[in-house]
Image (tube, rainbow, N blue to C red):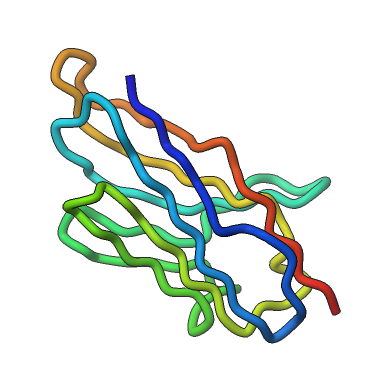
Length: 120
């Protein structure tokens, strides 16, 4: 089995910064991509940022220039550095991993989510 454990959420004032972490552990051969999604009440879950196995990144238009996704391959960990936070960034942030396992093949796993609240 694979576990994704997120950390780093919390309450911050508008204009502030937070850094989220997501560590993957378990039976993993390789990781194809790791992504951050978010979901706020009454809205659909949306892709915020993605990073591929070769380090290519992409971002939602709403966070470009403010958020940075990065990873540590040795630790199977992905980070989301969030700066210039706005109240509309308030949401539960979920980590997602597209990975290869020895017997199960290609699978997608989700973390449990971490709350980010930005006060105005």
